[in-house]
Length: 257
Image (tube, rainbow, N blue to C red; front, side, top):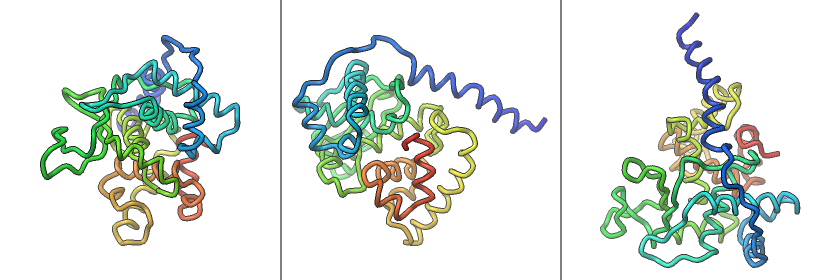
C-alpha cells in the first residue's frame, strides 16, 4: 500500500478523536441565562446573530455563556467591560456555530490590548501593526486582540474584515497541529483537495488584482482561510455573489446552511 495513503488513513481515524477532545469534550456545563441588555447589544452589533431565528439566537447566547465559563477574557493594562467580552464571545461562537456543543479546548485566555502591537506583544514602538494574534511558546493557549479593532469589526456591518473571527479561525486551523489553511477538524475529507485547489486559484487571482478579497489573504494558505472566513461571515450575500464556488465550499466547511 502507498505510504501516503496509509498516513491519510491514519489521519482520518485520529482527527475525529482530536476534534472531540479539543472542542466537544463536555465539562462544567452552564445553565446561566444571558441578561436582556446583552441580548439587545448582540441584536444591535452582531449581524450574524441578527440573521438567526429565535431558537438559533437562544443557542448562540448559550454558546457565548459557555465560552465565558471556559475562557478568561482580560484587559492587558486596560479596563474592559461586559460588552467587550460579548464581542469576543461572538467572535468565538460564529465560526463554530454549525457545530453545536463544540467548545474551545486549546484556549485559556483572551487578552485585549489598547491598540496595535508588535510580534513581541509590545504596544510601544514603530513596528506596531498587528491587530490580533494566536500566541505560541510562552503565550500558548492565549489569544491577543486589539480592543478597538475588535469593535470595528462589528461596528461597520458593510466591512469584510473582522479581527475577532480572523483569529478564532486561526485557532481552529491550528487545532490539528498545523496552521496551514486546511482545518481538518472541521472539514470532511472529500473537501480537502478541492479546497486546496480553490486556495491556490484565489491566491493567484488576488496577486494579479482580479479579486476583491483582502490582499493579506495572499500571504499564505493560513491567512487566506482566515481572511475569506471574515468576508464569508461578515458579508455573506456579497461573498456569495462575488465568489460562489468559495462560498459553497465554506458553507460545507462551517456547516452553515
